[in-house]
Amino acid sequence: MSNKNNGEGLSIIKSLDIGSLDKIDASKAENLSSKVLSERETRRRLLSHARIVGMEKEMLLLFAKFDNLMRNCTNAQERADIAKLGSYEVYRLLGGGGELYVDGQLVAKDD
Image (cartoon, rainbow, N blue to C red; front, side, top):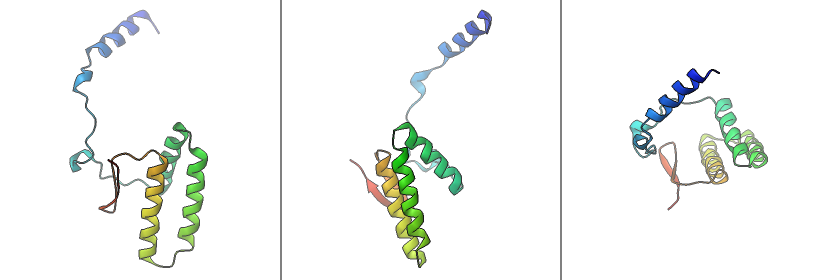
């Protein structure tokens, strides 16, 4: 990369107003995406995050545990309860923090 390109990149970075970037307030609905990811993509992202925090093996074990529970599930209510439990365990594994809602119901809240 040439020095001209480096200088231009530096000037762009210096001109950014970092102070205006705040944390995303997830309690406001307009800040949340309404896009629903596929199960495969969701698992891929969760596993990537678990790898970053050093919990890849534990995440894979959770996937296996809940796959087995869902496979042996007999009704819709049981599936919903297993999904909530699985979401909670993933939430805890990845550090928790804040509130966890599943299907519009509060499942966990950390103070």
